Image 1 (cartoon, protein in one colour):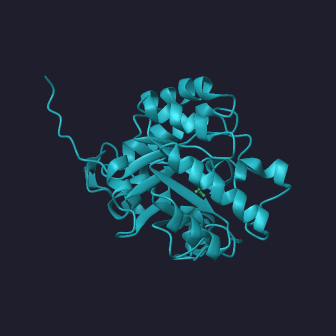
Image 2: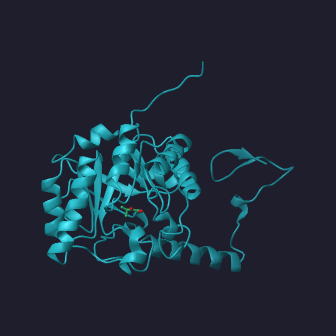
Length: 284
Ligand code: KIV
């Protein structure tokens, strides 16, 4: 039997128990090395379908496929050791009904070994959440601004401007909560509406463009690291990686053009003395 050291990962009941307690820290992740960097700091790593825009250059999340989510989910699971990994169900993979959703969500769980899936929980989705949870799939809901509804909404618009809209978003959050979602992302809503939802439901709320009163917060990692030249109002930039990359690449390009790179220490002297290279291993 092979030796296997199991690391305890954050699980759905752990998160649910955090309602009203220490805020839940979540970020998006799409690759193994970034997941490894984020893992020690985060309770949840979301393999968001924002991968479509962030990694694949798509205009929105509608074109993201189940195969893309599974591939990125597998990568993140390889990089993360303790955080809960939640994989987004992409547009078209769950809205057709509970049985279709179960088949697709089960594929995500089996092929990635993630701990949960997330669905954008519009009015028709509560029944599907219940169906999945009853069959062993933990589900995170997502209400408010639902990026997969971009074509119906005509853009990415914050919610909660009218009483009707507030009531609709609150009802969607309650429905997802009652159906058994273990946590619910609340995106792009008026701060007071986010607070009202947080007070009204048993599941912890994870805010993005919502309120500091939510039970946790999530951001798209590449936004908060400053990898894009534009970020939405609700993003705080904790880094300026765009500038770091620009400076590093410009220095590299100058060195290549001036034949300063590679230097002797960065080349192999085959057939001559073995030498140590940057990683410390002996090659040559
Ligand atoms: O896809 C995503 O990254 C998300 C978060 C913004 C919540 O759904």
